[in-house]
Length: 440
Image (cartoon, rainbow, N blue to C red; front, side, top):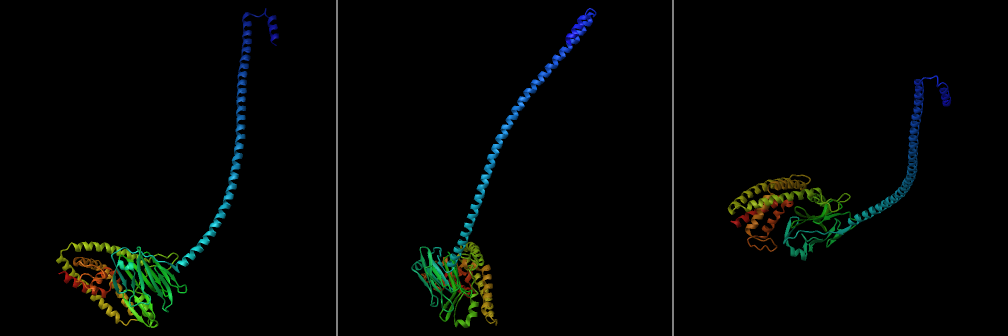
């Protein structure tokens, strides 16, 4: 076509003007330039496309390799998970096996524990730990004796009214060891204690409980057969002591009864005065004190604090002021005694089916009023009198101005929290009057 165009142009060259020829060549140049530009553009685009294709292929290849690697890793992780699950299953079986073994062991342990508890209810070791004092007071019922620490170390026999089974106390290396025998109402040996080691007769359903400061034995009738408690330098012994055809009852007082069969109701009423110091029921009652006992201990601590304050107050008085104070208190104590003595007399002739129960009620009312109003003062007064008269508390009663009854009574009132009665208060009054005279 180009050649034909040139030929035509050559043929007609003679006929064409110069401008026409220029225009034709201009058009031709434009066409040639456009073709060249188009080709350049196409070539550049094609080159870019080819480069992008190469890069895309490279990216695709890399992605394929990454996917292949991820697949391999996923496969490995999947295998790890499967292996871990297998281990979990194995561990689960192992845990089930261990749990089963533990359950068997727990069952056996429970059986062993039950056997141990059963044995603990049939035998054991009582190890009381008293605080160290130069002298101790032993209360059994209404009787009190003062015993030096040396006598306890040597061994001391407590036997009110010649008991068939007295109580033997021995202080050994800071431990108070007890020896005694406990009989039931048919005089069958129910429980024996030798130097703290005890064993019970399985046929007698007696319950025993103890800790480092006391012990308590309950008979098959629910009565307190033996109760021993330590508080500071005081050893208190109460209980029910069968002695062939008689019975000795120790509580706030001491009573001996004959014809046990005929006096069972009186015995029961008398023993109701005693409160249990320990728990005797429940799953883990061994060594556990009763709630009421713990409340009393709390009250005693409060009273001790108040007593210390009152002691200091009396110590700051001069002699004459102290004597005047004592005389005023003697009048108050006398009025209290007369009030409750009258109530006791009325209880004794009330015609009620249970005189002892009425007396117990009067006794409880008296103790509550005495504790609230006079316990702190009587304790502090007796302490200050003892200090001013400068006498020693011992079995020998070395001060010739003090008789033995007076000395014991001063100590009695110091332990009056649970044992004070109108009778004791009257004796204390007489003792205070004598001491005031001595002080003058």
